[in-house]
Image (cartoon, rainbow, N blue to C red; front, top):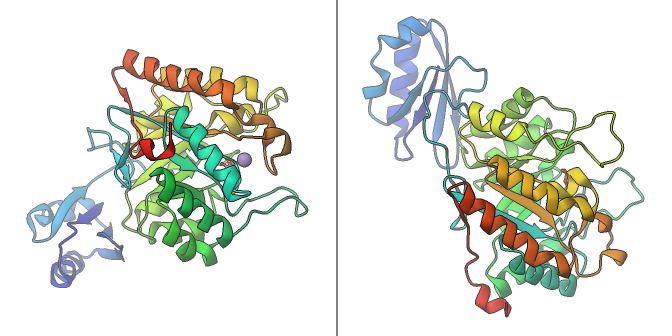
Length: 348
Ligand code: PEP
Ligand code: MN
């Protein structure tokens, strides 16, 4: 059983719950997050049931859930969550496009990619300043200099920033610039990193591990939620199979499966799954049609000289089509494309 305390719950309210649970022979594990405190109860659930916990001061929710992932489960959570990234919604009746370069390279390249993202219907800008690369000889990202470029481009275009963090030691710094922290496929089970981003007070985009089951993915989300941060968006980005024609096999059925199991929004990355420009628009179509809450797409003004993942980047000629498919298929599935705010500033 899990108790979610209200954001305004006091220390006395929390202590009272812990004492009550102890008096009934149970144990209470308290995690104090930035915005709320979560109390996990271990012991006899039937006895907890008699304690009247839901009516105690400061208690927002008491969850008795059979799934191993308690806080992100859809059980007892009829409505699906909407996560707000600096005012931009992901989930609910929205289809949200996130776009930008794989990696931040220069101010000019990032600004040009942001303008491309806006033309493609994006309301959020992606771009990696810290890149998890298979080879230690590959471009590792610009680090803080890259975060500064992202912040400048946000200033210029009004687009909130989604950027990856790869190390616990960088979480505070990245969170001081980013509007949403991305956990990449290679770090989905880096539990210390999940806990650190859970405690950082920013929404989190959690990519599915390339060899992770859906249950493992949801358990990873639970690590973040358990720190009191329920602003989590799941991202299906393809899994490893025997197939070599694509970079990864896009598990499109993971979208409705995860949406049925969890209240969290689920988006798709057609770029890192397909791995080829020619596959990105077809896979985006599939993603929105299947009910994904959005897509995250690589775009680049000069893919031929990109320092990272050039072959999968969309180019100028693709942008209108991405915008059009997102708009049209959103409407066909009873939703609307999330508009960008402040895009008049970007000259689109
Ligand atoms: C990325 O989005 O830049 C990235 C590295 O993706 P993934 O973790 O899915 O490979
Ligand atoms: Mn990439």
